[in-house]
Image (cartoon, rainbow, N blue to C red; front, side, top):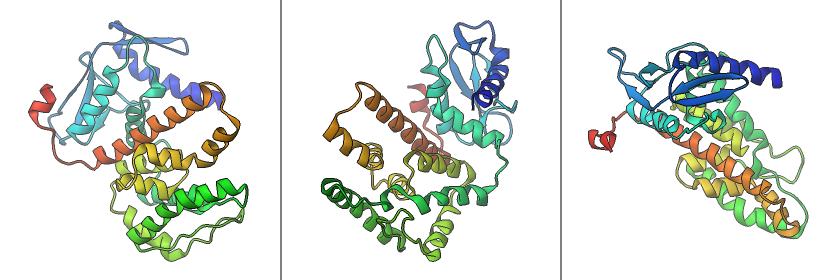
Length: 276
């Protein structure tokens, strides 16, 4: 894993080398570069938006010009770069990372493959696995997870169910086909964001509840951590560690959800908002 991370950070650093000599220092695995203030601009053709860092064009780790499909997403990414201070913290730049994934497509997947990967989580969905003891956790899962399951089954006219077996419930093929058809209505960028959210929550059910605005980010994250939160209430938590994990999960989930929304956004942001 470490060699892979080093290669990734090396690619990122090389993409930022043209930015050397600017005001804000980037220190990452012995490499350095600098950026000033992130801006965005519209290229002459294609209707895409690019991100400029102190008048230099941002590129992906794969060397492609960093472009996004609409103005709203461009503003969000530029804001993410603007939030960086003395050191660029790539692990906090979730929107930039998702854009890089969409542009470089490092695993060379097509739309159907992304959908299949996302739906794979349905077979091991967090809210479908139930415990038989202790009684308090059994009741908590029933009270908190059952309403979400009932909502999604009614919303998409599917059958999912839950199970106490380690094998999980048997998801009907009709259910998988219904979700597959629904996900085909998403564009590739939105699917990448949705798959990211699903991988964070380990749940298709909670992720669609979040995207459909049936759940908030805070609710979806709490429901995904239900057993852990139950154990914390009974046995206590490790000082700062559990809170850090929760806030990190919230940040990643919120960023992925925002990416889905902004990747689906076709309307431009009003000039007044841009000036603000």
